[in-house]
Amino acid sequence: MFLTRDDALALADRLRASSRAESCSILIEGEEAQSLRFAGGGVTTNVAAARVSTRVESHIGGRVGSVSVGGLDREELARAVARSEEIVRLLPEDPEFLPPLGAQNYLESARYDEATAALDLRFLAEATARVVAEGAERKVNMFGCAAAGRRFSALASSAGLFAYDRESFVDLSTTARHANDGWSGWAGARHFAVAHLDPAAIGRRAARKAARDEEPLDLEPGRYTVILEPTAVGELAQWLMWMLRARPADEGRSFFSRAGGGTKLGEALFGSDFSIRSDPRDATAPEAPFGEEGLAQEPRLWVEKGVLKSLARPRYWAQKTGLEAVPTAGNFTVAGGAASLEEMIRQTKRGILVTRFWYTNMVDPRSLLLTGLTRDGNFLVENGEIVAPARNMRFNDNLDGVFSRIAAIGASERVKTEMGGAAISAPPMLIEGFEFSSKSSGI
Image (cartoon, rainbow, N blue to C red; front, side, top):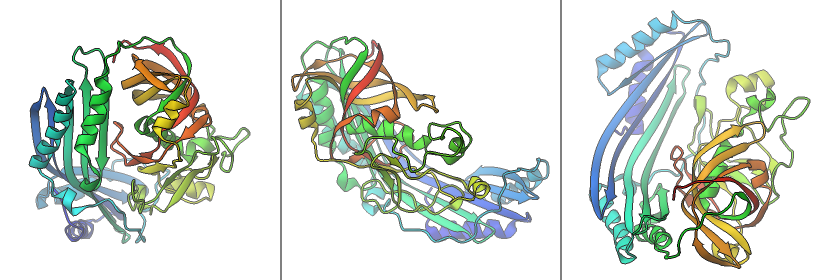
């Protein structure tokens, strides 16, 4: 279910007025969405759904009690307020509790498009048909998912805070399988505005990868030159963004901890051509206008030309350390360069082209050691040409090292990852000495 700003404010006002706690916070979230899955040249499932949920958080004497409820039934919501006040009296005091924020000033984000919000299953079916047609032309099998919808989030407090944001989205991805199931290709996109979506191009990219006729190769583990497509770079950068937090760094539990105490803010930790920023008004990957606790999102540099510029810092930790409170960024842009993917391939004597990763996990936050598998489109490159598909491999590498060995970088573009639906803009990169630790029999 989708609530306008006025509707969300009216609901929040009613709940705040009914609270008998010392303070309270109200989070209201909702979504209207439709999706379909396709395989074998046709649609296999389709779903249209609407939901809304409200979380009431009551505060008494440094204690916090919360209750969540689905739907908009007045009696259920009233009971949620009362129940949260019963619960809070049963809990111990939270030593890190801070009263909720009052009114804040927020930037307008660029995450909502009326045409995209109005998309229906007919549009998704037509987009899917264009993807399937690209596969049929190249005699490969296409599987995938398409989705579209709109969602909102509203945060209010008894201290006068009210924040509201809305976003629209359209999502399309496909895996193409060679006729003999020997290897695969993938392509996908997620946008706030449907004008940026090109279903045929998505189908074409995946199908071309799957349609190659060479037998796939089993490569030996080791360090390789890799050409990472934008989605692969976005997945690695997303893990880095999750690690950019001040508290673990201050407490000595992070790669960003300085020996002897403090953080590495201001230090050069990555290559000079590596930068990450976030901004609610970014044209490609806009951030939400507010983050945790209602903190305002501002244009922010996290890494600038390899130098660590910002760490996320919640209000409690900011107060404890006497520094600025900084919300984490869910959406971000990795700065791009001038090289094209084709140029990177041409300048590679021997290496591997990687479409994307999956099953990635942080092995050691103190060294930024990340592991994962390649997926849906590995190719051996020799003497500037793609010569054959390559079977998947597991990698183990440190993110600071990966982003310090950039030999070339292309234009940044919106990418779709499988980790949380974040809006990410990332470029292709040519990386030297990327470590593959073992083979994987999958394709």
